[in-house]
Length: 305
Image 1 (tube, helix red, strand yellow):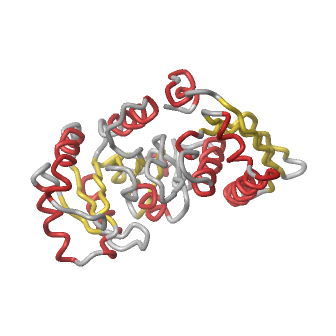
Image 2 (cartoon, rainbow, N blue to C red; image 1 turned 180 degrees about the vertical axis):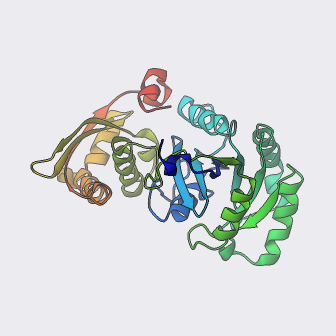
């Protein structure tokens, strides 16, 4: 162990949790200053837990981006929620994030409050309430929201932020560093995530499916990397990936007229993967049907759930 490895700093793990579409992935990317988690306007984009490593002067915080907490009877969604709930245990702090800009009233959120309370009962460490998208609402509108959530759980602090614009993030980091124990680095300071390039490539492809297709296609699709080969001589990475759908009728939609849609998805994904890998990429996409994959426990395990 060299001196860098043995340096005592403030370090720990923080779970980013909350309902779908609250902005957790945007927050992670903003804090790190680079894209680690995929982001789309659609809820329930995040399916797996992904860690981002935030380094600063005398600290390292491992941030866990988690799927949105919600109630569902679908096996895929239940597994996603379980991933999020499991992430609340064994961490140094929890950031519970909500979208403060959504239409809000005590009446509308009464039932949700009981639901959120059951999630927060899982928390075993200091928790901060993060009110996101505050740039979109009047400051006076925050008071009833803060009052509502403060009655659900004794948060250590309430922090208004705009994850997209970066407002309030310095204070968030200060608060998190304040509750981190003394310890060692979990990762070298030049490693931004624990995710493999293979996993990140699959996520980028899935993001493009979410962004470029409508209706039920995003939620009925899954991506598996079948082959990921590096050719050092040609400075090229060749990737074969399968996009799985649940019904035959969906195949024509994602392929598009004369293959236009799948080409559009492939071109957009390849561009982002090349930027991530900093080399040329040959991306080959295949569309396959796997009936009811979202209810197939074995297949969900292949997806890391």
